[in-house]
Length: 92
Image (spheres, rainbow, N blue to C red):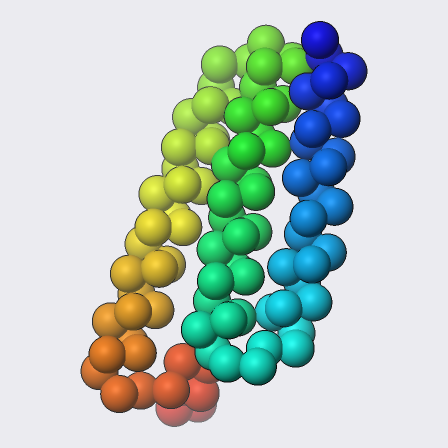
């Protein structure tokens, strides 16, 4: 069963190639943000699978933190978009 979980984790990592392409190519800022959300969701799934493979309960806590960070990032992006600022163009 461990081989199955490791195989699923590898398959999930392969999906990130498509997400990386979307982050780099756009075409809109919302497309890029959704692809970034894909990274967060995939990270949570991979860490949960690895938690099962290595029988480490603390990895489930790490996955929970990743999920919370992904939610906070999504809220921050939405608030910035609704305020009229163009995400990705800071006042540096």
